[in-house]
Image 1 (cartoon, rainbow, N blue to C red):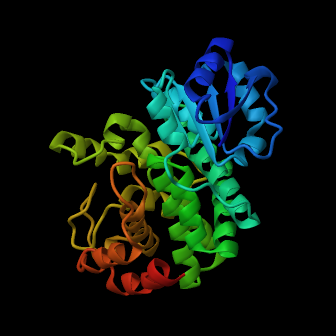
Image 2: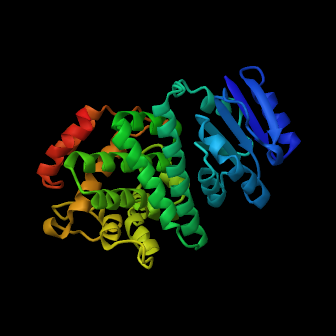
Length: 348
């Protein structure tokens, strides 16, 4: 495996070479001179202080080249949510602490998941996923920092994903996202792809398709307010943790409600994507006719995505099993829509 190292300090690069030299073929360069010329790079490890504006500018300058590399591991201060979000905004597929152990770093580089084949389909999907994850991370950073959310960046990223789904199909998208992205970012990208494919299968108008992918891109923005230790917890949440997670739809709505570029339909979907027809959902306990069609579509896509996503502590659920669970939620989800979703879940 060819691993390229980029750092803002020669000591950091020396430490990484010591950790990886026995198992990997290595090249390295300082961040200010980074060019990433080779096309045979399997993974890149970036060790840099992301509070430094020059480091951020240097990484943005090579973003197109980073997007071609399947695995992009950033080493940063894992205790800082802003640093973690900044890393994902710059294209990270994995974020580790600034001083990872040899086994931890190698585990992410050599985790047994095969590298993406060098095909045009894979490259298109990877680029769309790269821009999508960066856009989602930028939203999180804006919410955390009290800055304005870039709606147009999100629209461009969502449109790129929709074009990939329409051109290449859903299965390749699922494979790309699960292979190269983790946690909340993986989930949001899966939801966007599945929601788009659901919309395409239903034959929605292009303007409605845009509302769907915008709602999907924004649906979990409220999770910016939730600690990573809870979002990435391997196992069941306790009562207090669950209550905190359940604040995210309302928090997302609050973050977006004053932005004139966000439509009412998208706002409703962000706030109500965890509502159920029988009134057992949250945050407002809506029932039946109070839940619009766009939100119902997003809810089905969100649940299915959560079931089939890749997590290091659990196996990927088969799409057939995930669809059976949706079918078992009678009374909570619209039955005709669940029936229409079968093509997305099992065939498309």
